[in-house]
Amino acid sequence: MNDKKLLTRVRTYATSANLGPGFDCAGIALNIYNECAVYSNGSKNNRISLQGKNVQGIAEDDSNLIFKTIRKVLEEKYGAIYEKYEKPVEIICNINVPVERGLGSSSTAVVAGLLIANEIYDLNLSNTELLNIGLDIEPHPDNIAPCIAGGLVISYKTKSGNYSFEKIKIKKNFKVLLMIPGFKVNTCEARKLIPELVPKKDAISNIANFAMLINCLKEGNIENAFNFIQDQMHQPFRKDIYADSFNLVEELNDCYKIPAAISGSGPTVLAFIPNNKLTVFMSGHLDGLKNKYQNFQFKLTTVRNEGSYCFL
Amino acid sequence: MNDKKLLTRVRTYATSANLGPGFDCAGIALNIYNECAVYSNGSKNNRISLQGKNVQGIAEDDSNLIFKTIRKVLEEKYGAIYEKYEKPVEIICNINVPVERGLGSSSTAVVAGLLIANEIYDLNLSNTELLNIGLDIEPHPDNIAPCIAGGLVISYKTKSGNYSFEKIKIKKNFKVLLMIPGFKVNTCEARKLIPELVPKKDAISNIANFAMLINCLKEGNIENAFNFIQDQMHQPFRKDIYADSFNLVEELNDCYKIPAAISGSGPTVLAFIPNNKLTVFMSGHLDGLKNKYQNFQFKLTTVRNEGSYCFL
Image (cartoon, rainbow over the protein chains, first blue to last red):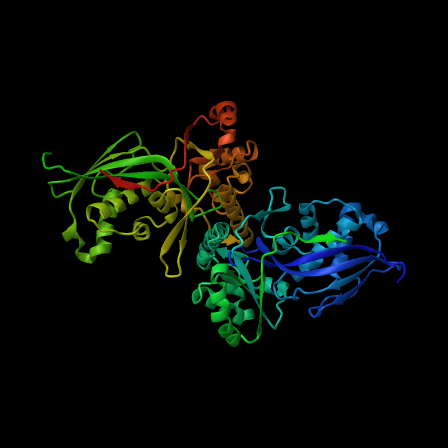
C-alpha cells in the first residue's frame, strides 16, 4: 500500500435520457454522482473496490466498464500497441447512482473511464472526441453526452457519421423529482421492444412535442410542459415492463399537470416540479403518491449544470 | 353595382412549412400577402375576381376555396341549416402569393375564408377554433396555423384529437430568401411520395435536428442552423420532383453554410440569411447562384410576425 499515489479523483453524474419525446437524442444531468479515487498501483493488475449501497451487479474486476473504457481510449490513441502504454491503477469507487434504473449508471462508468484516461495519460481529448470513443463502449449518446457536459444536451449525428452534441440553455425554475421503483430494467432488453419502423404520424408527434418541450424549458414555462412531454416512440412499447411507472407518468401528467416521463429505458420516473408549485406538490400530493406507489423511492434533486470532472 | 357595400378587407400571408426537419408540424409566416376586399352582393350568387400575375389555376367561381371555407365555418356554427344564414358576397382578390410553389397559397385562401366568415357573421371564433375548421378543408396545420398566427408556429394534436398550435418566440436577426422555380408541385401528389413508416433512426434525426433548429432560432444563432435544418423524412423522397431545388438546398447548406430547406412540398427553396452575412451573400454569391439556377426567381423577404387580419 505504500507505493499508492493518488492520481486523480473523478465525479460523474446521473443522467436521465429521452425526456419523453426526445427519444435517443436528449438527456439531462442530475445532481447525483459517483465518485472514484484513482491510485497508481504497484501490481500488474487493475483493481477496483466499490462502496455504497448501489453496487450490486457492478463488475469488481478488470471487466469493469471503467477499465474497459480506459483501454478503449488508449487503443484509439495508440492503436494495437496500446497495451505498452497501460498503467495499472487501483480505483476506489463510491456509488450513489442506482444501477439499471434508467439513470445512466453505466454512462457514469464510461465517462469516468474517459475522463480518467484523458487526465492520467495527459491526452487533451475534446468532449466530442471523448463522446465518440465512449460510444464504442456504449452505443447511445443520450446519457454519455449530458454526463460529459452537464445540463440538458441534445446529441446528433453529423454528416461525417460521428456524433456531436449541444448543451441547450434552459431556465432552472424547477426541481427534478425521481421516482425509483425497486426493480431493474435491462437497457438492451428494453431496446428490443421498440420496432425499427415508426408510423409517420408518431414521428411527427415526437418532432413537434420535443421542440415544444425544449421551448417550454427555454422559456421557463414548466407549467405547460406536461402537454408536450408526451411520447409515441418508446414508452408505449415498453409499457408492460414498467406498468406502474407508466401509470405514474400518466397520473402526474394528466391529474397533477406535472410534466413526467420514463427516465431512459426505465423503470425510474422523472418529473419536473416548477418551483412555484413545489410546496403545494410536496406537502399536498406527495404522501398520496407515496402511499399509492409503495414500491417506489421518491428522491428530489436538481439539474446538474456543469459536466463530470476530474479533481485532486 | 350601387348596392355594393364594403364589408371587410383581409390580408393573408404566405407561409413556408416544414423548415427542413419540422415535417408536418412547423411553419413560418412571410411578408408576402394576398388581399381581398369583400363586398355585400345584391345577387344570389357569390362572385370572385382575381387580380395579379399569380392567378393561374385559382377557381373564379363558387368553388373557390374562400367560399368553400366560409360555408364550412357556417356549417360548423349552424349545422345542416347553415344555408339559411349564408349571405352572398363579391370578393376582389389581389394575389401576390405564388400558386402551388410550396408557399401556402391555398392556406391564404382558407384563412381568408375563416377570417371573413368570423368577421362578417360576427362569430367570435378563437384562432384555435378557426384552425380546426380550416383543417376540414385543408388537412395539414403547418401552413394554416402560421398563416393565422404569424411568426414561427408549431402545431400539434392534443389528447382530445383536435389540433392546437404555439407561436415560438425567435430572434429576428435574419432575412428570408425565397428561390421560386418556374414550375409547380401539387401538394397531394407530393404527399403520396412519402412512405407511411419511417426508419427509427430517421425519426430520431428529425427530432434532434428540429429541436436544435428551434434552439438556434431562439438564440439568434443562425450561423449554426445549417447543421440542423437537415431532414430525413420528406425531402429525400421528393428529390426527383424538384431535383434543382434539392441541389440548391444542398449547395446553400454545404457550400455557403446558409440554412436552407424545401418550402412545404416544394419546389420553392427557403433560406435564412443572417443579417451579418447579408451584404456579403447578396453582393458576393447571389449573382453566381442566379446564373446557375436560371429557372428560379430570387425574392428577399422577412418573417411576418403578426397574423393575418381583417380591416376596413
